[in-house]
Length: 223
Image: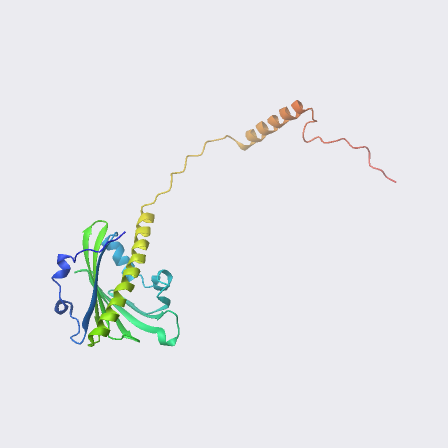
């Protein structure tokens, strides 16, 4: 399983100015961890918007694609427990180099929120992840409360994502056992003859009439 880790040195050098975070947003919380998945699997998961309600049914009950492009997508998601007031529109903008992406709420509750995720390769099967939550709030207590709620939610979201990524990785390396080459049995006529001979021998040993003859019947009655 993944564990909390110190921030990657590469991530520590990236401040909000380098990311281009809006000056009206405040950093509410940070989530730092490591996942047992390659960075290629992480990117596959990031662009897979369809898995949101399927894998994260605890948080989402519906998703609808509005726009898709090379750097991401825009979707309308309905948060649990559903209803018109629970619909938000979120937008993904990803930069594969230098390995970071932003998810922004553009409509609905929390509009203006920016969630930045920075990635760094540990090795072929491990990726460092740092998530920063920037909110359009100034009141410190409220900022801390919502920031902590985001941090806990994203911990569970990444736990589920990691399990899915590891499963995908395991399946991608799975190979079926090779089929054995069939053994030639010969012409079908010879097989039938051999089967009939074997049955005849069994009948003789059992004291039965040869198969195919059946019991002899008398002449049909005509009247």
